[in-house]
Length: 533
Ligand code: NA7
Image 1: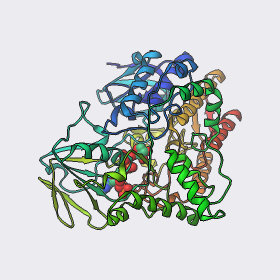
Image 2: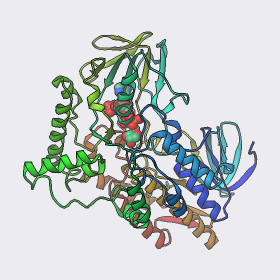
Image 3: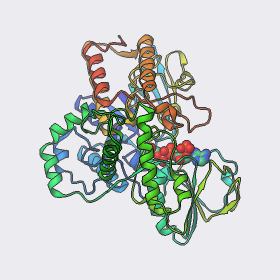
Image 4: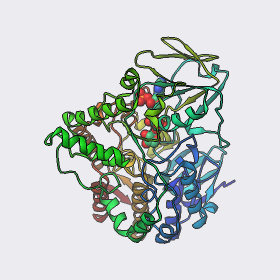
């Protein structure tokens, strides 16, 4: 029990954000407690244990930069590490920096209420613990509130049911089984080839196809590790100034100003590189110009047709929305899997899902019988983990209700009406459009600096000013409006959750530009925030 405890900061979540924040606060001699629903650290990489789960940013870049010792001593094994390898890293960091004693595991935060008199948050957990804190930091992740599909009869299936984000820790053996999988986002695309290797029959239910690139994953060579370790400082600087938190050369050409042969060669190079960012930044106008984007779309369609033997299946796997406007995937043998005789694709746009039955899944076409169903149906992204906690700000203001028409933040860090509440990689920041570790470190550093500034000035409360927040929300929308992102029904837009307002949630202006803005705000005495005693 942590009843009646009082700390400087309550942190919700012990993923990459919560762990680093705890470490930074300790170095400032600030007291903190982390509440974590899981039994271990790692956040995303604790929960998402489905077969084939991997990160789509390279390990040497998808790692903390705050400790040179950690950078130098840690040995990554693979270019794109598996979930177990990333979890091992998170656990190593927790041990290396003695973080576990600051974390209360198996404990979900249920609510938090701001006390305007005392200028503190009262944070409650599902175990009825209550902790008072000067600051509340939601380090809850952008893709952590998982989502089952809205299909009638989910409970009636008599076989085994799994969601990719809640995979049994002991794993699942599908050998000899008839398996159905719903969803072809990253989790589906990564797990389908692995499940297909075990299952007797695998049926994939696809509502929207994904664009996927072969990851070309491999073991890291000792010479490339050595080179990165020798140049880490320079690399980290480049990460922070880049668009996606992954340094790549700035594109200078339009896809429309080059010959088809040149364009094909450029796309081929990106495809061969196994890097999503290389594809997305192959030309300067892929994210903003429909005609430019069409060239990439048509080129990828050709690739899919080259790989998939049945042209009708290849057609079904070929997306029509602009490349990059839904999160693209990195895969290992995804499209090839559809050439296997025991793997079947059901296009739900032609034959929609009707219901889950005792025996399996019924579409408008027929009933499919399964021994197991896997839901790779994703998350209530970016806002779900925040609004699932009953956060009450000034005068009982509910965060969930305040965000009814879409999230409203200043810089994706705070929200007007919620004093001393910080979000790590919240909506309105680059977050999911970036290498998460880069964005996490930037936010954590900014938040710790802000708290330190307040304390040094003898101030106690920081809160976004309404006008600054309105201007930021307008700016985030304006930038999104220059891009093709709003054209797709993506979770960036809240489109995968029925009833969720259709708002482009991340900041699309790039990691480097965003960091500059945050630094300027801090340098100008936290311009746009109200700081009071
Ligand atoms: P995603 O990317 O949200 O994918 C979920 C998939 O599930 C997607 O294909 C959805 O189709 C599909 N889905 C969701 N609800 C339904 C219903 N009701 N019926 C049929 N199909 C449905 O989640 P992931 O876990 O794969 O990946 C999340 C991120 O993690 C990923 O982007 C990477 O950043 C890492 P839809 O596209 O909505 O039509």
